[in-house]
Length: 366
Image 1 (tube, one colour):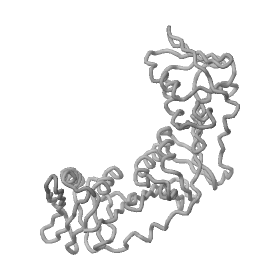
Image 2 (tube, helix red, strand yellow; image 1 turned 45 degrees about the vertical axis):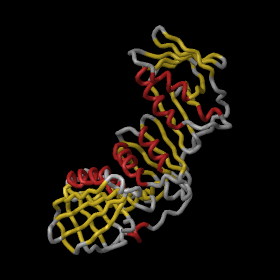
Image 3 (cartoon, rainbow, N blue to C red; image 1 turned 30 degrees about the vertical axis):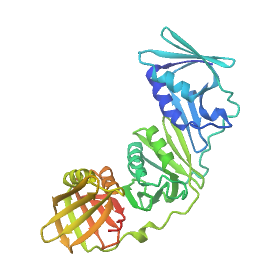
Image 4 (tube, rainbow, N blue to C red; image 1 turned 180 degrees about the horizontal axis):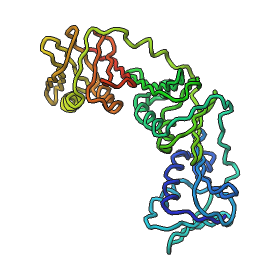
C-alpha cells in the first residue's frame, strides 16, 4: 500500500478515529490499532473497541491498494507532531509501514489485521431520521454529564433517546438529578426509542460533523452516517425508568432569577460548603429574594441574597451545589425559573423562554 494524505487531514482523522480504539490491554491487539485501507473506494480509517466503531473517509492519493493496522498510540503521537504544510506519505511493506514527512521518515512495526472485527450496521432501515450533526453533538455533550458514572445500573449510565411526534427527546439521570432536552424535527414520521451508553455518545459527539447526518437504529446498535463516513455504537439492553413519575405536577413556590446572579452566588457560596457540598436555598416571597447559605466548620459560612420574582409560600431546601450549577451548561436562557413542590420534593429548573429543557434535582436532608 502506498498513499499520500495532506498532513492536516491526516492529523485530524487520526485524532477522531483513535478515540474509538481500545485503550486497555486486550487479548486482541488489533483493537488497540487504527486500520488504514486503500482501495477502489478511496482511503479510509477504521477503529473499534467493540462498544463503538468508526469508518472514516480521507481525501488523498492512493498509488497502491492495501490494508495496514498501526498501533493507535504511536499514530497519535506522530500525528500530533505534524506541524508543517504538505503531505505525509505511507508505504506498507511486510510488517513495516514507513511514514515520510518532508525530510523525516519513520518506520513503524504494524499489527496483524486479519482479526480486525467487522463494524456492524443496524439491520432495520425503517428506524432512521435525518438531523443536523451540530444539533446532536450539542445534545450529547450537554446532557451526558447528567448520566451516572457507575455501570452498576447500565440504564442510568446511558442516554435515553425517544423519537415521537416529530420531537427528539433526550434524557439523562444519575438518580440525584435529571435533565430532559426536547428538539423538534422536520421528519415527523420516524418513531422509536433506545438507550445509548453516555460514554459512547461523548466519543461520537467528538467525531460528528456539523452538517446533516442519518441516524438509524435497531434493537442492538445505532449508526450515524454522514458524507465523511459512519460511526456505530452498541445500545444498552435495559429498561429506562419511568422518569415522568418523579416530576412534580404542581409547585408551592416559584422564583425567577437572572442566570448571571444565580451563577455568581453559587460560585461564592460553594466555597463555604461542607464535606457533602451542601448549600441551603431559601425562598422568601415577602422580601422577593432568594438566599443561598453554606457553612463549613473549618472555613466559615456565607450567605448570598439574590433579587427574584417569587410567588407562593416560603420554603427552605438544601442541595448539592454541583447539581445546581450543572443546569447552567444546559441552557443559554438569561433568566431561570425555579419551581419547588415542598420539603423533600425535587426542584425543577427551566430556562425562561427555553421550552426545550427540564432540569430536576433532588434535595438533601436539611
